[in-house]
Image (cartoon, rainbow, N blue to C red; front, side, top):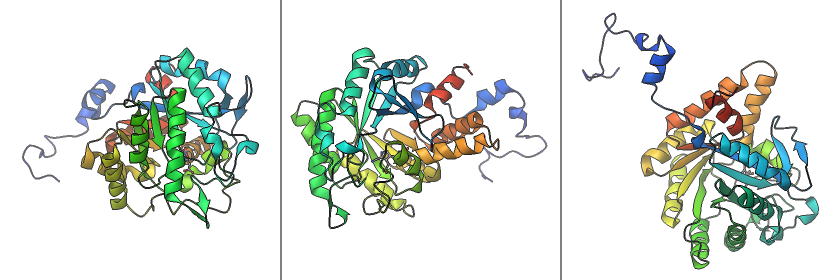
Length: 338
Ligand code: PBG
């Protein structure tokens, strides 16, 4: 119990239930609020025309072809969502050990960005910077002697970043966890006259089992079957290290920070926000989404209630926004459309 007289009350004069009696009153005393503007919607794109593919491990999430993107982006924007993140499912035959397809100005991601920007320029478009959608081994960088080598990977990441910048994206989100990549990407962007292109770095990205469904969705799971990402992603046991990672990215020029996964790492979100006062985003990753979905499909929990609860928990922990596969559903609920 706080001892300050300001907070102290005593029963029966003080009853904490009093403020909770009516919806209007609960709204009035609510400490945190969620708006569609807090949400970023990840969209997975695939080759083809008028193509919609379901993803077994992520019920309710679809891979869609580029031509369908403008209508989806438009729907999100009209619900109040202001930014989307594009992830590609690259054809297996285009993957290679060094992931060179990421440098192709006509690759799936670049075509997707151009298509969205052509039709709905007002929505913010975020592109991941990492090689895993393009590598035949599913690692985020170039592998030598069974390990992802840092500095050569960073060189390729800079070229990938520029390629995506040239396609017209607004934000680059390095999700690779190589050391020093934010500074190198910033320098490369500035040199190419992209001073205002933002960097939203995956500053504290943990080596997590919760990415499983996503790897299925972008088709890197089988390639990665015998590997993991523990030599570059943060150990789930560490929160101080997550703060050091964030400090480095800020020093190197990051504009916004991501903590990922989300719900199991609320302490990290709070720590990052309180320590650095940076725009801080939680990524409610695929495994978190799929767990909610799976339990709701069994009738054990309500999808919409648990989705909205987790989203407000991120805000309570200090996140400014949330990247979530449930963004459209949540925005509809917030707009009273469901
Ligand atoms: C790849 C990347 C991953 C995610 C986003 N970018 C997976 C990974 O690191 O293996 C995960 C997203 C999710 O699980 O929803 N660099």
